[in-house]
Length: 197
Image (cartoon, rainbow, N blue to C red; front, side):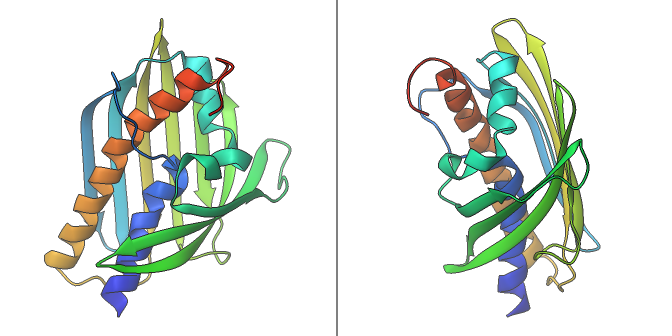
């Protein structure tokens, strides 16, 4: 069914870039999160804060080859070279589920780090299940804490039925984004502490 496949692909868009699972006992906070859909394009915008140093947060988000340890939704991930000296190509296979139906979704991204506070990616068309898209992480050091700003878009070429189909996907994406902030904090706090991630 188009609805089911579209939902699975849309659900994977956040999991593929955030690649994070919820953590317990966290001081992390989400100040705002917005998820929207228009003309086949899903957009996610998040602002929040985690109680971990910015360098460690950046380290977690940029450790592409090890993102599979961060989320059970990532079945496989690999860094497949450098299209340019400043860009790494990252391929991930995601297990995405909606309406009790699961499917593997492939995503290929060209990821760059223009500065120690920014990570940017762009979907490589024709090499996965997304037609287009991009994401950006901006992190700001605030002493022992880090302020987060995240924006992502993913485009599918599949038809989504109005109202219920889009609403269900947006609700799922919102839940994934909010839970990811706690996991990011937990993993960043453990990074460099001598404890296993």
